[in-house]
Length: 186
Image (cartoon, rainbow, N blue to C red; front, side):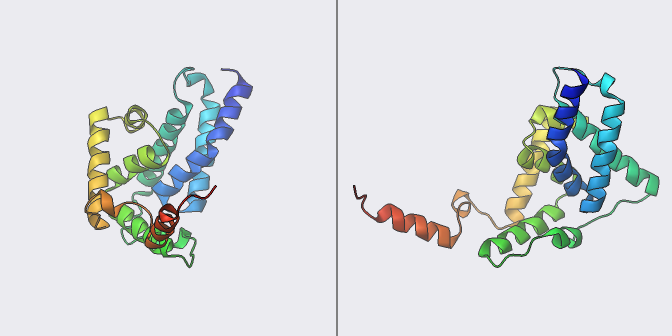
């Protein structure tokens, strides 16, 4: 891979890296620092990237390792079990969906870190199970079980009993029902 192609690949992945870093750290300022460190490390080690493999997975691995190294050096890890940091990052709206999102963030913060991490990798950033396994350094089956446990725990925390509980809010459902029950006019 040429240097310009590698640079373009790095730039393309910045939004995904920021989202993942923010989910790990709970702070946009720290997330930006982590992304910057990740990009510097990736650029300095571009000769170690194997063309034909996933650049995103490689970058996520660097970011994840950078995050854990930072907290090992500090000798502590910031826990956000009450969702304090996530709440500060929230954009407060006046819609009913804001309550749903706030509930989701609180439930997500209650998951064990390893489950939350893989759920974000697979569910939010779109990484494959294989890529997530490579990033975490575990077997694919471990990733699948962590994602399954995370989804089950989220459903429990959000009081989702079945598929009927998933879907649009009451207002959206009413609007869809209203338009679907009206006859189609030419």
